[in-house]
Length: 160
Image (cartoon, rainbow, N blue to C red; front, side, top):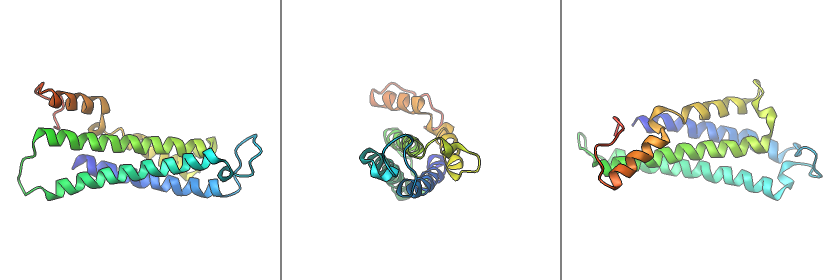
């Protein structure tokens, strides 16, 4: 549950960043020193934006699948370690997808997105910090997943 509770606001922040960047991309923001009148005129600009959308949607779908599994568990039932490891891997992947989407969005928007008065900066900071919650420590989650796959027990994470 800790991963779900931590990840949900990160997906929301990534979607908020998409709204900010979509307005800039579709508006009069032009890529610096190009012949384009706006970012949306660039085929790769449009592709990067849709790639950010795809990664955010993938993070949402992964998170919803994990939530469905957790919600379907009978009260007090124990989940096998293999399944817990797989679900944790899904949530860690979703966190990574949020960060990847945010990076694409910031690249499209440009450095002014980091200005303190720009809402994009707050979304970026929230995603950058939140997706680094200890629950999502990717190298530990991957190590545990490998231990479970090869039956090298115990796992190293105390939360698995």
